[in-house]
Image (cartoon, rainbow, N blue to C red; front, side, top):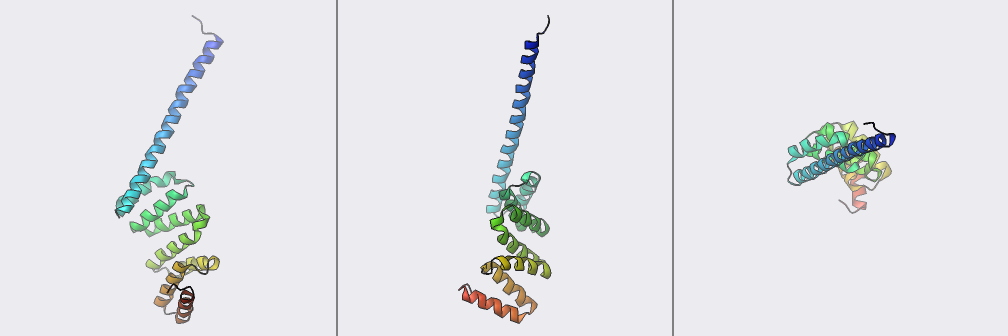
Length: 169
């Protein structure tokens, strides 16, 4: 007949265990699916199948949150797939989440901006890098390219001398 308070407690406890197990199972399968997509995306990048890498990376964007490894993967896939706006946004996010890589991110952004002929944005990104790391060779080389194209001979000569001093010319 009648359910006792202990019986109700056991019933509620049993229901909580079942629902909690379902929640853990669902979270685990979502994490496993994400890991599988990450592996597939890396494999596509290694094969230089940039369109597939971008399609996989764009599905990761919604769950990337604060994971710098995912944002770097998104940036590389977007860059390879010739999606500069997406690549720049992802490199910025990666630089925010990975302070040690901030200069690398800004250098990549500068290169993308140069390809799009956004001179002031490229110059701003390079200035950001070279203010904090004046001997960053990749940024110096990009600056030399930019100044060469723009005909800024004084800046070009100064940059080339910096590269020679660093024995990186």
